[in-house]
Length: 542
RNA sequence: GUGCCCAUAGCUCAAUUGGAUAGAGCAACAGCCUUCUAAGCUGUAGGUUAGUGGUUCGAUUCCACUUGGGCAUACCA
Image (tube, rainbow, N blue to C red; front, side):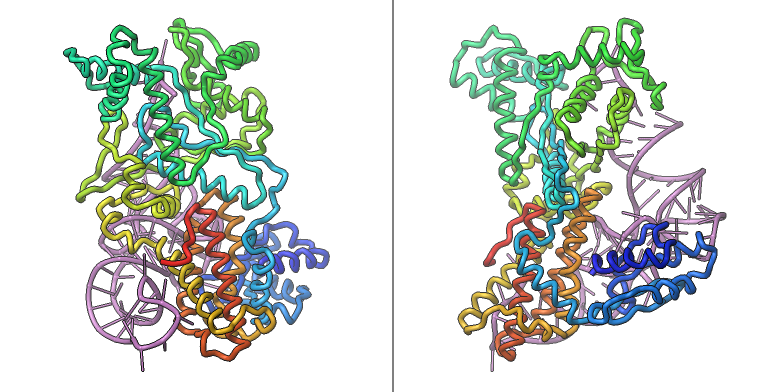
């Protein structure tokens, strides 16, 4: 539908050159009696042309050369909207299109040939993934899916470092627990990792090696063991929610390949850095940011900024057209430095899209659970998956705009998971499977020959909604908004359930019944495709 | 103090980027199963979009200020 309008306006540009001057946007009006699609072009042009919007609208309509079998009528309404009404028979064509493209219906080629990387999760291996990481993981993977649907070739990458202070403390936490198990009296500092998993790693070391490591230091075997165990668990957890990374990028590689030193030299050569009080500073204040920041500490150790910039340079070197960085809001102060650094070195920073998601608040027994990996009072992603399952976890995290805080009431999720909207969608899908099983028994088969019979309000609303799917996928993907897919699917499922209630198949006249079966299959295909973008399963039975 | 995000129905959230009468789900109330899955459908009720100004044909959306929350503001990552 929308494509038809876009083409139609393009053809009209030769008659009305001013149409080229504005971006013409078609939207589905919230009011049914405002047509199937609507544009405010005349109102926007009114300002430029200094004419009344109504007159411009009239002129546009007169010049539009549309096919009467496609568009039934065009109206001017309100302050100057142009409303389009499509014919019932045109609406049914979408069923044929869905039958033709099947599991690929909704995909587009707008960005084919382009390479994208989505960097997400990127949690250092200091402890199990929490519910907060879960939001990052699910949203990141879903954005990657959406980008694939609009043509990108997408790589998923996890960036981490296993050096630095955090990891030293981790290793020493394990060491102390190990000594404790060997009967030594220890003092466990408050700012060490308090979680049970530290004790488990220590216990494993003791069971397998006895007292062998009594005199080892924190940096060696203890840190290595901790990293190996924790990373193994992280990967397993991600797999439970269908997430598989293409690559795990270890910050350490940047040092091994000399990228840190060459970057440092580059900054110096371009006079973008200077030394002060034994540290190296980046001239960020000259690059439009608030303050200069340290990139190498007086101890000689780089701060995270330097490797972060070097890491992003590798992304450019690897030829990505689009680089998504997905962070929690606690990182909101770090990315401007990285982007400024890249820009100063001549990289096109617009290719990097930094997405910040707000935190997940966990409510349990009516209270907010404050989360801290170090203090170990958090709910792990694994526990959440145990409670509600992968589908609910994925759906729930995708359901909301990343700019808003996500309030997760754990008691509600456990107790009332049946009322989660994901079941509503899955139920619609399963219901269709059931219909298809029944109709086969009745000797009825889907047919595209009499789609014109689909003329009731319920059928027509459903058909129009199906048209929107590819547009919605494109829009959602271009704006990195996973929640729009869930909104679309809920609306589609609602229209289907209404159709199901009003329009019977078995018992209707054969041609109508077979057209309706085709419609059911079309709806089921779209639900399944939509759920697959979200990474949620589409069951045949419930 | 300063920067980023947020404040919408009792609760959790939308609103196609400045559009027409602000919408869903849950919770509440009233109905619908001898017929393709009632995990469903229909209806009722629920709002000064935190507040005050401003910008214009038109503001939940943009600007300023105020109030209240979250996250930052390291020679931690």
